[in-house]
Each structure stands twice: as structure tokens, then as C-alpha cells.
Length: 83
Image (cartoon, rainbow, N blue to C red; front, side, top):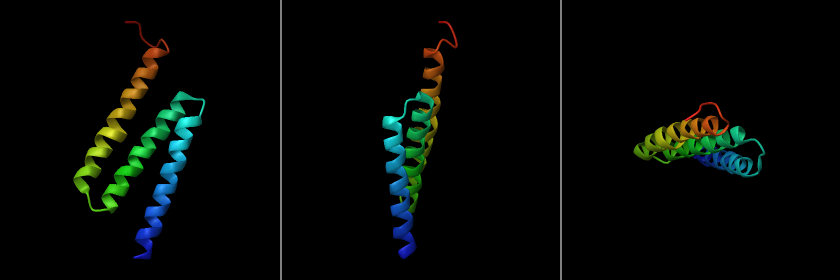
């Protein structure tokens, strides 16, 4: 039982650190990766808390699709493609 609480606290602390890094880092790529890490850790936390359907949705949409979309938009904004 103590491992459950320790793991939960560690995941929450890493999530908080990643969120702060996403807010204050200068590089947009690092910010997108940090935001994706927050979503990935949230999905792991949902899985630990016995909500596998929410965990799968968060991993697929929050961590996967959103991160890919942000990188696509960053590439387009920097002039990677015209049009």
C-alpha cells in the first residue's frame, strides 16, 4: 500500500515539474515535449487509479495526437512548407 502512495506522489511531482518546464522554457520544442510528458504521466496516473478507459483516451489524444499536431504546427510556422 505504501508503494501506491509513493508512486502516486512521484508521478505527481514529475508532472508538476514538467508543467512548470512547459510554462517557462524558451524553446517551443521543449515546451511541446514537456506538455506531452504531462499528458503521458496523467494517463499512467489514471491507469494506477483504476480508470483504464480514461487512461487510454488520455494517452491517445492528450499525449499522442496533440503532441504530433503541435509539432506539425511548429514546423509550418517556421516555414518548413509553403501553403
